[in-house]
Length: 305
Image 1 (cartoon, rainbow, N blue to C red):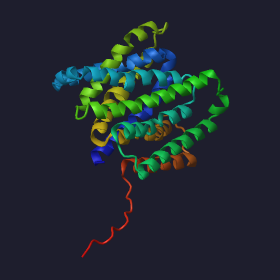
Image 2: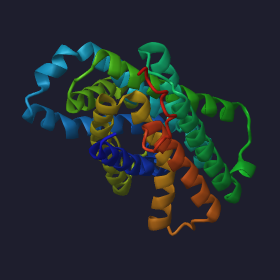
Image 3: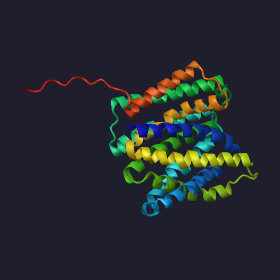
């Protein structure tokens, strides 16, 4: 991974680290369906002018069928599923299932694209997920979220929604790598958001909230659309093109780390030793997945004289 790709990965994690906070704040006002539509429609309005200025609209038109599939599996349906999940599950548990995305991505890329699942990458995936699980579990315990959660049919459906969303993210990353290789990141970002907005327009109209959200909610929704979907998907699809789906999806391991950072910076939430340990494990696992840690090689046997 080149320094520019690593910078994109960290910036993407920082942006997506704030997205779950926005979702938790906005779903009560908009509802999962309307918020998902506002998010992708706002991202479309942000990305479309740049796409036209770059003269890449003809490229998008040639690949419109693939954009429909990618828009559904990478935006419309996952946004709906995670929006539904945050109405029932604590943030800690939701982040656990969201961080399962690299695991699904690696398995799909291995089975579908022949992407090698090496010993070091497998160890990194296991470490990253273990760190996220421990970190989220600790935060849930100290905030009494788990004690307040009743594991009934609603919780089971929310967990299933998270896993389905993570699975769709994993499929979308490999789909983009296989069927849209070399396509500009702007084309994939704009195309997916436009397709998702078209798919969600009618459901959002039917599920629009009876009480109009206040101006502050609309401003936060605009930030969610522009940053977490517009800018973020340019970075994400560029990473998929350059470093592959498994490495790009490892960004979800870093999302809880930045979520804690934003909480400490903006909300004065305390940072404890278990949080630091969990963050270190996550960073180590991500570094293994990305191939950033040095690995000792066995000396090769001497050749014939």
